[in-house]
Image (cartoon, rainbow, N blue to C red; front, side, top):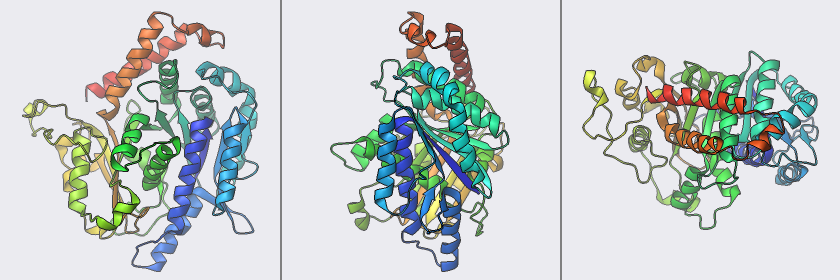
Length: 450
């Protein structure tokens, strides 16, 4: 099954380039599999999923690049071409000469309708190249104008044009300290609109990835490219081929469909978080050994304690005991309740791993059985230099606090009418803001009461 990636705005295009570079490195990297036949099957599935091949043999990304300014797209195309192992199609990008000025309304109400036909023609062309279309992965930020506003508009267009296809929006959460003065408005409008047209929202928080770069990877001067490479590694660890069946070898399944069906059992709950373990500098790998029990113990505690990485986990948080008293447990610390979890394991001895700790009913809400709430994908192929690695995609209360914070900050600005005129001049009225607040307050309420 093939995935068409839609890269939107500066952030989406820069992240997209790192994602395809990461996928291509893994495609040609050491496989660590016991059989060459299994390795070939994995590589074939990766190519079909993310690339198409020219007659000359070169790999071309299944991607559409969209930005309202030409600079980033031009840089992205040339960086991919220089790398030599893959490239973007010369006919799959769209740009103009004027950006959205960090204004969601400009991207959504002006650039979107004006350029809808040209953008959707590119998407349609890319979709028709797929023998089997699995769905769409959009890459976008929430803080600016093009990625967020145009991204929300394009997502609605995708839903209208491909009503039966899966749509997963990968969203970059802005720095809490602030990148743009109106980023909270842009974020609220983006999330509320995506909630209506997307199947799921997979979120990366800039503050969290920055901390991973500093504390786990020991990067002193952290650049946006460093941040994007961590995001790309984590996305690759989820979307590279696996086989859900125990001991199976079918790499051809649709990862978007499997992910949405396993993690989004109700349309009220669409927000997904991603954790990955281990993460360390490449020069430390030779001196490190990992065991599956150790990795999964840390990953489980990261889940229940809402920890972002394997350092600094609060080990005092415990899963509540079963029974009516489960809402009050001895640690008196907030416990992260899950709706559903997907565990992806890659590497040596993967099929002998015991997964019982993630099937514990106390981790989950009562209205899904652990058999329906927990899924695992596996492959004995190592990923990105790690002999053993695990990723966890979780639909849980993990993002409640940052979501509540963004809605609260946006509401405070809205109450004083700050910058509202910047949106009304492009057709977004106060009622649109109120609708967005209502949508997200309902999301917050639903996750709070799990």
